[in-house]
Amino acid sequence: MTLWHWISAVLILSGAVLALTAAIAIVRFPDTMTRMHAATKPQVIGLILVLEGAAIPLRGRGNVWLLVLVGLFTLLTAPVIAHLIGRTAYREQRHRDGLFRVNELGDDIDAP
Image 1 (cartoon, rainbow, N blue to C red):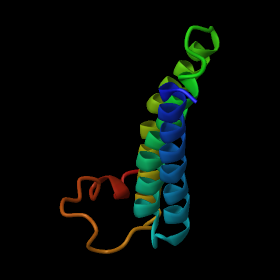
Image 2: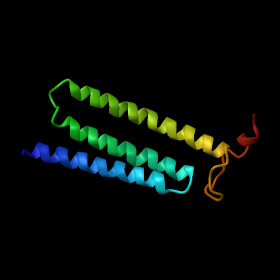
Image 3: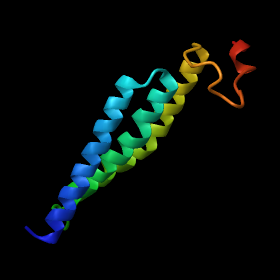
Image 4: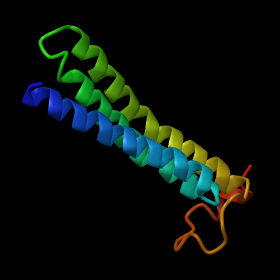
């Protein structure tokens, strides 16, 4: 095995570990806001690491661009989805009391 194979294996394994911890956190965390954090940050970073690890053996081929597109799509959509989930959870009062220091949406909940 070459050094590139070892680097690829380390990236894939570390990404898989991050994705696993995110999945465990989604099940174990108590409310929607903390689950949302676990579903976006470590999950996306874990996916990017796995994609980088998969791109190393594919370097010099056209398939690498598909991995780049998957990574870019994930980086663009994950924050939007997290924002929508967080806003919906807030509107449905599915958060712990005292979780927010500043309540910027407090006046918006009464609006239609």
